[in-house]
Length: 388
Picture 1 (cartoon, rainbow, N blue to C red):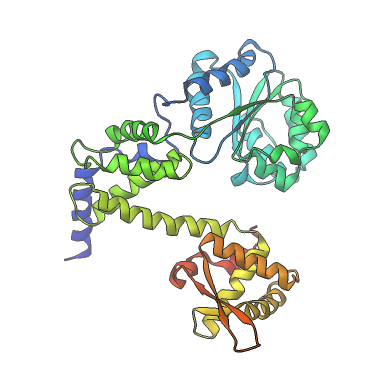
Picture 2: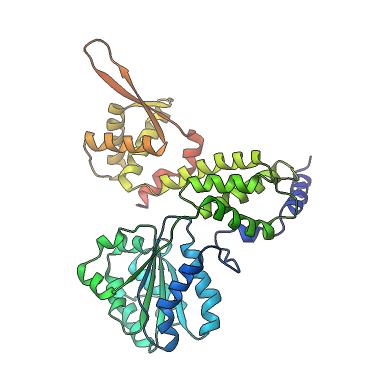
């Protein structure tokens, strides 16, 4: 079959399965958030003074991944705010994606349509530009705010808390990140906390049904698909994001196989694919030294055409790599601990083998993930760019 004909056939199957894929996107905002009415009400009550021209309570929203924190806040910004005060100025910033304090400030200036010099502006200049440009309350949402604090400290939170005009909504998966804040910052914030609890399996089913009605044509889902996706996601601390991702990927797999229905078998295949994807994302997020140790292990295996390595060889391999890539020296004990973490993450599998009578034992490590998958990560480039 000609490649174009194959693509046309896939498109034909896709049109029979999907009605609107966009509702399965992580960025989709539903018309009605399910099971988060109370949290939405709390957000409104704490932020409502801003609609009357006053500074609102600084609000911090916590909860594990997939509990609807970002979705609910974006719903509030995009659906609620325009009906209550269409003139309210606000900025939404994902701190992990944007990065440093300076870049967060630049994003806020852009969102508020404040002119600023594109070159030669310091962090202090950015603050001055913001302060001289606002004379009414503004709302700043700092998603993954813990990432900003870890990278740049709590200066931005302190400065905003001292402003007469800036109200903050901070969002974080880490309920303990405020332990990193200076006592002055904590005192000045005078924050209110809201905790988003995980969804249960029945709630996840309703959320999936809401999305499925919009995403798929009627009758293409087997009856057990939504309950299975919900049950699997409920095991992962009630993660709605994972549930939706599983459902979406199941549909894509069905299309790729030319099926006109989505079955539980497609869900099982989606689970396997997601586990690999999640491991890749985990590896990308590892601290710099852990990336270096893993790169050393993979380099040794490729050089010696093997899928196994001893702990002692890991130490030697890291010593070579650290000199090449300007990484810090670390102890045998630290490398042993990092290797243990790799076993916990499911990247490596370790077993002890006897070296003979009176010679003790040695730990031999093997990969639990195909080398072809790990090659997609480009660990060396991440280390060189210091993406930690």
